Image (cartoon, rainbow over all chains, first blue to last red):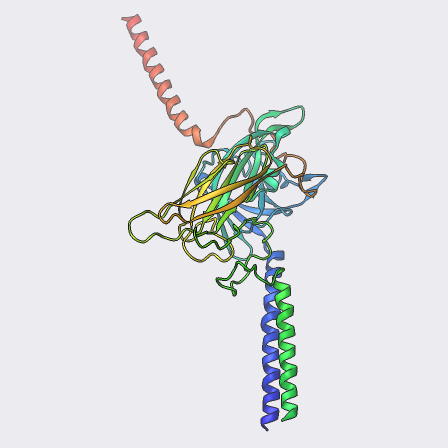
Amino acid sequence: MAKSGRVVLAGAITGLVLVAFGQNLQQPRQAAASVVPERIDIPSIDLEAPLMKLGVKNGEVELPPYDKPDTAGWYTGSAVPGEKGASVIIGHVDTKTAPAVFYKLRQVRKGSRIKVERSDGKVATYKVDAVEQVHKDEFPLRKVYVEDGLKLVTCGGVFDRAKGEYEDNIIVYASRV
Amino acid sequence: MLRVKRVAYAGAILMIGLMGCTAEAQTPTPSGSPADTGSPAASPTTTATATATATTTATATATPTVPRISVQLNPDRVTAGESSTVWILANCPEPQGGPAHTATATSRAFVSGVTLNPVPSGGTPAPTGNAGGDWVRGQAQVSGTVRRGSYRVDVRCDGTNHVGRATLRVVRPEPLPSDVPTRAPRAGGGGTFGKDVDEGTSIPLGGVGAALGLALAVGIGVAVRRRRS
């Protein structure tokens, strides 16, 4: 009886170890793959908007459709807000007729808070470090798409009617708090 | 009894094998560096991002005369041609009584020397790795005119005269990763351009406009009356 008892015990311990380590290995990967940001909130300019996913096409990030002017988008090739890396959220400043989701983005000031709600229930909080207006020919690709932190991007400056687009971008840089 | 022993051995071998496997899977470098004697069980929580958080720990060569402390830079490499900000973290012990818990960091790459102050709990960046003990930190500016190369960063703890050093690398700009978008977003249709109706400023301007209009009306009224009388 003692023999079989020990055998059973050894088996049980082995099983437990397997279960424990197996879970450890699997969990983080699953979480990282499926979490997406769902809402953005900037209390200082009364902005609260849902987020959609934006892919990339011919080197250009897709934009939310004009028939959803109050929706901003998270570039799926960037980090999930709250994680390390560059997180990029883009929204229209206006449609062809009316203000859109990031109309007031240029009024954001250094030190303002930005909150991003994620699908896993976590809220990533950021503090604005800088607001910048740059010409599209000098768009800081590295600062926006590579360097750590949350970047909010919209358009601004002069509207070029011939090209049908604004000449500048407004970029908000924020770091996690 | 022989059978029990065999089972026990088999179990032990299996366990060791399992532990070995998982250790490999979790940490790319299972054996800690020989300098890390503090807590060998420190859990590698940020293994996935280990390459991204580039920090160097100064090699703590044990010289008996001058107590050496660990110094970390975050980031430990900056791009030549653009100005950057670098955090310096130093493992300065808190002095007993009297002197303030501060340190001074100097480097030829820095615009000026920097005072390091105690790291607030939960503040970022925090020292990485085996981060026991007391830490101080500060931010240094690196000018865009600093040439490529390796620069020594020296830290001296003000109260205790502990010293430590780390190396800052100023490197050529890396080419952008190939998957980075190449165009600026075209995020606007132009519907509000030229209509300049910023919500933030429209209300005060409206108030001023109304007041001006009222003043003008009153002025005209007075003028008209004077003329008639």
